[in-house]
Length: 149
Length: 149
Length: 149
Length: 149
Image (cartoon, rainbow over all chains, first blue to last red):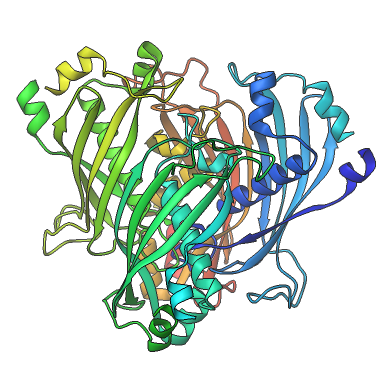
C-alpha cells in the first residue's frame, strides 16, 4: 500500500453550511483548518487508522504544530467543495501535509461550479504525535509509520 | 411529492471530528444545533430547495427562532451519527422540525455502534422566514410552501 | 453568600466578533449557547468555583442536559452585549439557569445601543454534574452545593 | 498617534472556555485564529476603527489572505491568556500583523500562571481590504491608512 497510499491525493467532498460562513457572506477563514482536518482524518481512516481507537490503544494523539494557509477566493453558502490532503513528508514524530480546497468541477453536482480549477485556499499543515497525558512529543507507533511509508 | 416529502424522516450521516468535541471528551452540546441544521439543509436540498439560490431569487432566508434540545448520552470523536429532520408543522411564515441524533446502527460502518437505538440528543427547532435585508418576518414564497405541503 | 449569590443576576459584557456571525449578517444562533456558557462560567468563577481545578480535585464536570432558547432579535458584528445568568433552581445533581442576551444600554459604550431594553435572546439551561470518566450523573460536591445555596 | 499606534504591541486578555477546547483537553488549534482576530479587532477599536460602521460607510471589509501559525504549548480550560497584535507592515491594500498568545504572568489573576513567558502560539496574519460586494481587493480608505501610519 505504501507508494499508492503515501503519494495519492486524497479528496473529501464537503458542503458549506450556515455554520461555516461569516457576516462577509463567505466561509470564515479559520474554518478551512477544520475542513483540512476532516480531510486528513478521512485519509487516515481510508488507511485503516481511526484516531479514537488509536488513542485508546496507544495513549497518543496527533496535534497540529504548524499551519500555513493562503486564501485566494472565497467559498459561499451551499458551495460544494473538494478538500484534498497529500502527505508531503513523514518523520518519526511528525507528518507534513499539503492541502487544498476547491470548488467541485462543473457538473459534479447541482450546486456551485468552478470554471478555473484553481484552489480557493491552500495550506501546509504539520502534525506531531504526542503522549495525550503529557502533550509531549513521542515516537509514532511503528505500525502507523509502516502504513504511511 | 407532498405527503411523502412532508412526512418522511430525512436522515443525514455525519462523522464526529476533533472540531466537534470539547475537553470533556465529548461532542460540545452547542454543536448538535449545527448537526441539526445540516440535516434540515440537506432535507431542503433533497426537495430541490437551495438556500443560497433561494435568497438570491427572493431576498429571504430562514432564521431559527426557537430551539429546545435534550441531551441524553454523549457522542465522541470518530462516532458515526445519523441526524434526522422531520417537519412537524408548516405555517405561512415558519416551519417546526423534530430532530434527533443517534449512533449509526451496529455494523453500519467500521466505527461506533449503537446497541440501544435510543437517541443521543433530540430537539424541536422552529425556523421563520424573514426578509434578509430587514430581518423582519415575511411570508414564505408560495412555491416553497407548495413543496412542503 | 448564599442568598445574594444565588438570587442576584450575574451579567457578562461580551463583544460580537466576526467568528460569531454568519452569512445572514447576524450572530449564528448556536453561538448564543456559547455566550450563555461564558456567563455561567464567569458566574461560577465569581463564586470561587473554577471548573478545571474542580475537575482535577473531584473528577467531576458540569454537562448541559437541556436547553430551551427563544430568539427575538438578531445581534450583529461589533455589538456590545450583556449576557446574564441567574440560578433558577439547584438540586443535588443539577442546576437550572435562566439566561438572556441584551444589547448594552445606550451610552454604555461607543458601540451599539438598545432603546428597548428587551432581550435579543433568552433561554433556560439545565446542567448536570457527572463523573468525567464515565459521564454518568453524580452528586455535586457538597462545598459546591453549599456555595450555591 | 501614528508612531505610537503603529509600533506598540496591543494586548487583549482572554479566558479559555469549554467552547474553545477539544477532546485532547486543550484549545483547538483553529481557535487561535479567532483569538488573534479578536485582538486585531480590539486594536482597531482602540484606534477608533469600528469595522461594522466602516463597512456601512465605505462598503469595504478586511479579509484574511494569509496565515502562518506555530503552536508551541497548549492552553487549557480556564487559562487566562494574553493575545497580542502588532502591525508589522501596512500597504495600500493590506496589513500584516505579528501575533502571539501567552499565559498571563504569574499573579496576574487567580488562574493559570506562566513561569517561562514564552508564547503558547505565534503567527503572522495578512489581511487585505476588499469591496464587500465583489470581494475584490480595493484601496484602503485614506483615513484608515492615516490612522495606521
